[in-house]
Image (cartoon, rainbow, N blue to C red; front, side):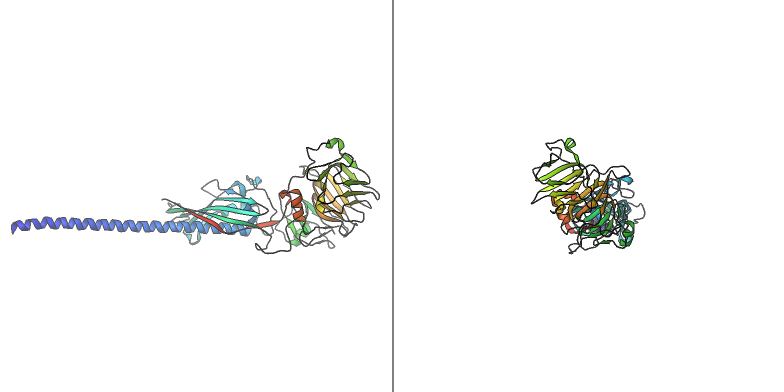
Length: 455
């Protein structure tokens, strides 16, 4: 019995050790599972924070900064207030330029959004931060954008505690253009094409007709002013009328078209003034001052135009032929004088000097007089231009873009902008001329990627 009892004690000890080891292993496994569950929950919360941050940033862009939806933003620092050159004006050290004039109620300048690109997630669960926004497309048709946002799970988002979990989400979105204050894909009778555009505008009693494109854009006016305030800023008087919208704000202008450098004539030697009655025909050299290119566009180099008495400058175009007058000096067509062109408004274009840095206009232009409507597109970005009312109704059918527009005090001066003016300008002169006051909207999610960072 003594020998048998000697074996029982070691056996009990061994069994106890085995059971203890098992319990320790089970406890360790349970504890590891608990830690894993906590980490998994923190990772899930980090992803939710990133998702919430992306939604908050996109809401801010759609609501107050839709013009930034077509601009890239690559955050340059992971600490402090987010900053990127693409969403800051040059005066603030960035590279942003207005590619389209902004709609009323949009916020400006663009760098105001930077402080809203990071913040505390709803429920104070952690912090979010924009990492990058990249757009692919153009300001005319929209495109797609990819937004990357980081979410950080912390115990106290206001403090500097260690980050418990981090995650990035990468979303691809559709960015679509739309008219101001109109939902996407909603038909609208009005567009954002500016039938009259200038840095400074004094409308007086002029009329701008056109239910679709009869819009006026003053590029130095405040875009957030009401129509009444803009009308006052543009000097619209009681007998003046604008069928479309009044807009204010900057817009990216295309370079003014130049006389072709490959013309087989010397433009300086053949550039001469028009000081009397004359007929210009598309497809002709018109006395050596014009050249027709392979696209049936006749380019004419003109130093200045001055008509007196009842003199008439007649321009003949037919079919797909077009004439472009490249004018270096002043234009005076007023009184009983007249400019006659009965073709499409895009078939006759007058281009002036490029915008200079001088404080005053380098060209002075008066168009009107006579008794017939002029079908024309005028782009003279360094000219002071006015219409001498009294022609047919309207005086001009087409569009006028200039530096300063000095309206007549007569209610007879008017411009009618055809409903298709924006499209024919785009077709005739390229996408750079497809100007419009529009905004954009980011819609839906085309693709979604999660990147979970190990801790």
